[in-house]
Image (cartoon, rainbow, N blue to C red; front, side, top):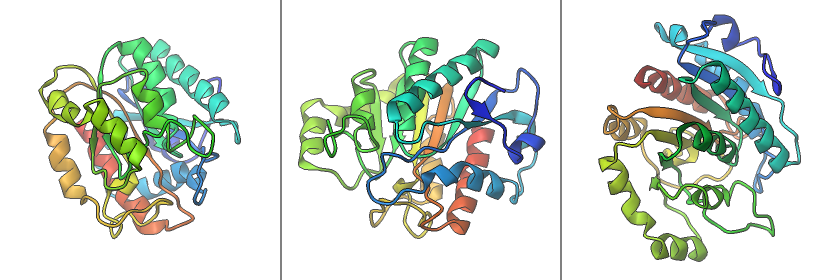
Length: 268
């Protein structure tokens, strides 16, 4: 048990308990800055339930479940501070741990990146998303799910986007002005460690309908893994799966995310 986590009775009972288990699942049930339809706080345990109902092979030997972060509903800054401290705590117990966050809204990625910078220094970020999330502020707030990648860019400019198909004029201008479009090719050639962020609205809505900010079109699961195969020789230092909303649709989305999670853990 870590300072800001609470146990679950789901994956935790089946997962490994060895101190050197490489992959650690951490749920972050936070959705307080969602501006369309909240409900992402219910996603971590929904994904865990689905994960226990698919064929997982020996995947449980490869992971530990640290439970859910005790978030501060209504405060993104306090929640991210707790998340950063919790990941720091995981690293203090095992420097080789690979945190896998189950969001929650996309804002949680910022807390992970802040901890990763302290542990790994310079690294690349591969972001699968239907949106850039590069607004400087949204509804007068600078810290929310629509600004998270802008806040991360201020800390680490090595960000590549895949699957974006909706953006504001502000985001398009920022993207072009800063040459972010060239980053993906740079990341493919880079030897730096890699952090992967997966906003499930990147997928085709017929595959992952359970999202609050859906955009028509999107990639298929096979296409996602075709991309990930390009990075199979890279050192992946962490990842997150965010923006699933069980209140929109739970069963098929949770199950498909569980398959994605299984293959990502095997990839790690």
